Image (cartoon, rainbow, N blue to C red; front, side, top):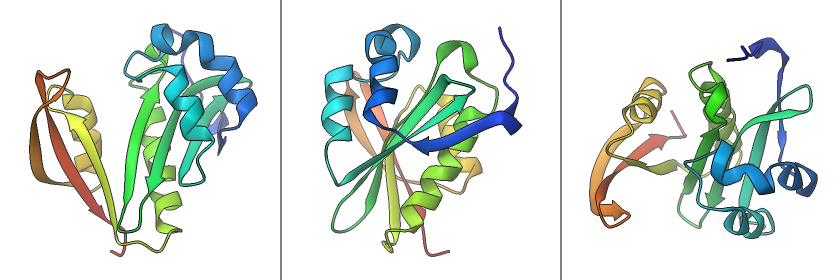
Length: 153
C-alpha cells in the first residue's frame, strides 16, 4: 500500500476533467459510490458542490454536498480503496464542513450505513449527532443512521 503524505494532499473543487479521470474506475476503485452517471449529473447541478483530494495528479478521494432551502446534505465521502485509513476522509470532511458553513444554513445532515462503523466514528469525532434511523434504506436491507451537525456552533 502506497502511503500518502497528507501535507501534499490538495483539495479543490471537482471539475469535469477530474470526473473524466475517475469515470471508468469508480465502481472498482471507489466501491461505496453509486455510479459515474449519478456523479456527472450531480456535478452539473448548481445546488451540488463536489471536492477532490489529490496528491500530485492522483485523485485519492472525493466528496459532495447538496444545498437545499433548509439544510446542507452530505451526499458522500469516498476514498480510493488503497488509500483508506490514512486521514483522507478527515481532510474531505473538514473541507465539506467549511464549504457548508459558507451557505449560512444551520444544519449539515448525512445518512450512513449502520454497518459502516469507521464512517460513523469519523462523523462522531467531528461532532455529528445521531438523530434518527431509516429502516432498510440501503439495498432494502441495511438501515441508514441519520446524523446532524450544527454549522452555527
